[in-house]
Figure 1 (tube, rainbow, N blue to C red):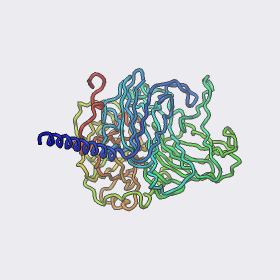
Figure 2 (figure 1 turned 90 degrees about the vertical axis):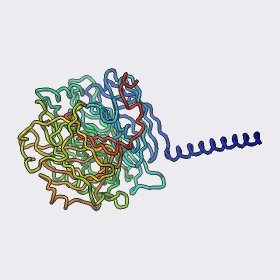
Figure 3 (figure 1 turned 60 degrees about the horizontal axis):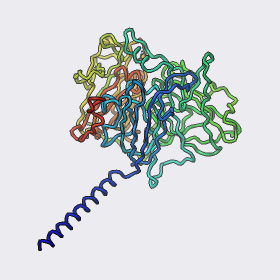
Figure 4 (figure 1 turned 90 degrees about the horizontal axis):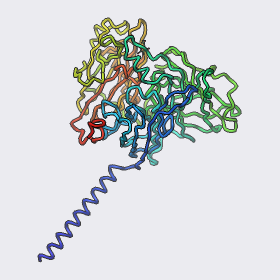
Length: 554
Ligand SMILES: O=C1O[C@H]([C@@H](O)CO)C(O)=C1O
């Protein structure tokens, strides 16, 4: 009896172990549905001349821009990142990836992680849960503009075709480029007297630009040629990670059909030029349907600020022509809209509608409205940008809760602020988990008379519906009647136009702390940012790697 009962105990324990193993294996295969894609990145500075002017450029494994991450929906991306800078910290944000279940890998230094110190290795791990075009970039100080940038391309499962077809898939990352390093620019912004960064020296397409360096001994770079075959259709995934500039992208003699914005399919619509703000991505279809015996200019030009920088140029090279064959026309004669034609830009934003059957409609009701007034101000004499008169600083001893709305009756959005002094705060807005929140971005006059600027706002961890845009001061009674609640597009970045307002709605359904900020590097640095917190009680088991830096980690 004893023997047999011991035997059956052993069998039972064995069976139990097998069951546990099966459950563990099964549940891990449920958790990790897609492939695991591992990357080892070494991030460092190298002397490079991407527009013919030599300066320190950030490379990933020697590449600038960094490698494109290609994955399929449901895949797990693991990036083991080594900081090989000699003196600088780093943190990398996966722009447009919602980080569901991994809010600690959102990569915002000071919000979701301690920075990665020189010599350290940090491993990011997250799931790309939706198809679309996304980007990655540094989120440490103003480091993004030194070149730590790249694109992420997520394809849908093979059983779920996209609502459009194309023969080839290409990525084009657009940037602007400064010759001064980030420390010099950041120091100027944080000084009295204030020293503005000014306009960029060049614009770049895929990390190549042109600058008139006749006095420079380095060899001028040629712009990249995009090769195409006549009568084929190309999907161009266009992303902008400019530091400052809003851009217009155009290809001589060709129309572009917009089909995707920030990872969401849109009802196809055709444009002559695509307006794109920093932090946005679009997919456009390009049909190579023009005379194939010549090449065509691809250009980007500055809009919304006075155009002081020459357009970036690349060449659309029809197959069989030499890629170096310049189009007979002048690049500068390629169509480009007037820099201050705000109406034209707004018209494109209004033309974007969600693709039927692909994008969820917004909830009809909301739980809360937060009106965020964007102003340029001063704090203790320093020039800053504020939200509801509060300025987010990295000094974590500030614990003032910012107000959820500004006093709209007494604020003149068309005038220089009458009281320019802003307060510092930690910028945290606490949202009830799963509540529906409307955010109104209200633009205003800067510290200069008759001047208001464009600000592209980017939300981490969520997508929002863009409900509407308007000119002047938002009217809380009248303007919501004009919201598009039928087919608004979902995005993660949206612009608020000079003297205008933009209304968006999102559901606070992703537990964590999420940055919401102007995607202009210097405005972010000058405090134009807040943080939304919701459901942090649901965030468990923080990985120790995000806590503490250097010695404090141990
Ligand atoms: O933050 C900024 O400062 C300058 C200007 O307002 C003051 O020099 C500018 O154009 C900004 O966007």
